[in-house]
Image (tube, rainbow, N blue to C red; front, side, top):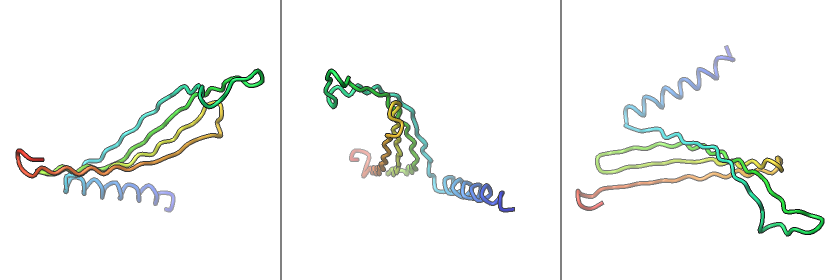
Length: 113
């Protein structure tokens, strides 16, 4: 029974969010990308006869999750992102950072917003 408990729990939570989104008009925002960047480190490493310039490939992964509510005269949007950078040559070196954005737009009349 316990092995199905976790899947049933996630199903019930997803079903509750689905009902709330249909009832109150909330939209779920899901974003993501994978990007590869070449980093030549030309400003941080001085080339000498013993040490050559270092370079690396940086893979950046981003996942964003948020909600949006659009009313007749106002819009509310809350979205958060998680970024993960993985270095190809220095695999132990990774960066992780997050952000969150809140946008609220209101229209006072047809001519003023």
